[in-house]
Length: 218
Image 1 (cartoon, rainbow, N blue to C red):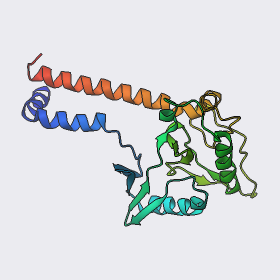
Image 2 (cartoon, rainbow, N blue to C red):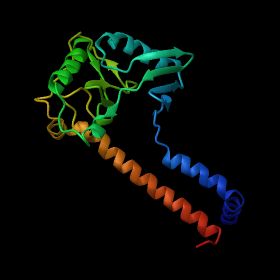
Image 3 (spheres, helix red, strand yellow):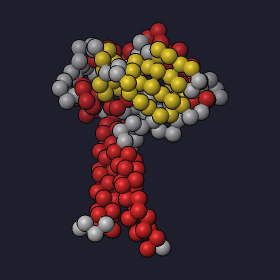
Image 4 (tube, rainbow, N blue to C red):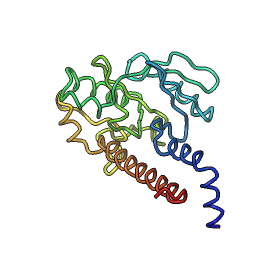
């Protein structure tokens, strides 16, 4: 078995290296529902299943009048094209500590979701974006509309602990840094992303060392 693997690496090492590079260094992550491609100022979503495609269109149609989600500019087949809604919150805070009207805008989105009994279920810094001082919520594939058998609304004051936010936390002022510090569930994206990128780099380095070792370069 060992000699077979060594022969495979020797014969196809360059193909293996390219495949591993794409696997480890790919930045487009659409999860289990879609593939994501960025072209200019647009994102192209190619859905794997029609139910997820239909769900996205249904939700964005409900909220389009509020301008709090990316605008859909094209949809056909399982393809949806949306406008780029700017920089993610974690990127925006690299150059800004606050945003004029941040408290009002965040709380408006929160109240709008509550009005429609809408639960995002995966809110973090990567799914909150800012463009031209407007705030948008993206990545709605894990969302749902909440209603229990009694018809009562979900408690929108309870924020889940130890994972990403189910619902959007309230903002107390326009300071974004304090908003992130006060709501650990918003930070889950950064922690998970840093760990994921660290593991990818380790795997990538390990694979290169194995290939070079088999090729007797080191």
